[in-house]
Image (cartoon, rainbow, N blue to C red; front, side, top):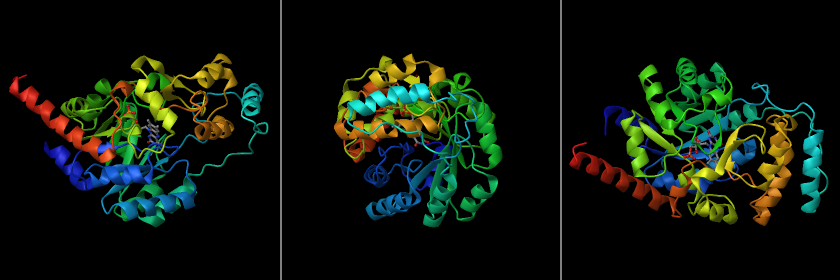
Length: 366
Ligand SMILES: Cc1cc2nc3c(=O)[nH]c(=O)nc-3n(C[C@H](O)[C@H](O)[C@H](O)COP(=O)(O)O)c2cc1C
């Protein structure tokens, strides 16, 4: 391992430079987080959609299942409609949702009252739990918040989708940056500029960040599914990888069985970036709800977090019913390479594949 990888692994308290991505909506269950950390990688608990009490409980459960290092993740932004996109009038969306509510036997949807940013209370719960590692996306927490974490000795990781964002994160004093390529599953982390201009593939993004901010360890993320992808990311200068879609099919991943089955058969040309479910651009497998909402036009979709709140009841009901046509099927472009395995076995294979790939490249002298 190069020095940069050894240093980052040591600071993260892990053996292998493999991070299981935080995956909101229950996918990164405490069981998944602990299994990955116990296998020598870094498990990440997504806490953005959790209440402070759920965060406390989730962290306690992770700690019950592992004594190893782990990461907790929040959305550090996105609540003030800063990208300027989205409908100011939700009536078209409410009409669409009413039909789905009716079909699911639910009362009609209602416009929620003002949605407060949950970050401050969530962050307090995380501070109280004294976590070893904190990562964030959608923005940068305020300097005093980051300082509080640092005083506790926590390692702080931000998410960038452009070189400019990585520079801003470096200036804010993060310890490492996730370089999220456009192949990535779920929400774009973009926070400084229009997301359309920040659709940079992992292959192009990682080395440009590495070269521009050489002192900052870079964690490559987006489309990395197996040992070949890990070696490629390392060759580009990444000190570690963060993988989401690859872990979605693990036994411990907390997504509906119907979602897992669909992913087994889904192809790389079936995902799309959409605002249909949350109001914020995110990559998922196309289904009929996504098609219908997009057909209504971008101007009909309210911004995050309003659209996210409006579609929550349908998504929850669909998850219960295993209805993949109304679920947000977040997944990245590498989805054909996902494997149904227990998480520990996946980590073990990733390490073996990494070594075999390095051996193959060395043996052929290329
Ligand atoms: C289902 C799902 C949910 C995600 N939720 C979060 C999240 O809550 N916070 C976050 O920082 N990243 C989240 N991500 C993005 C990952 O951190 C990562 O960038 C992405 O999974 C990498 O691409 P890949 O899916 O091709 O591996 C999510 C990804 C998936 C697939």
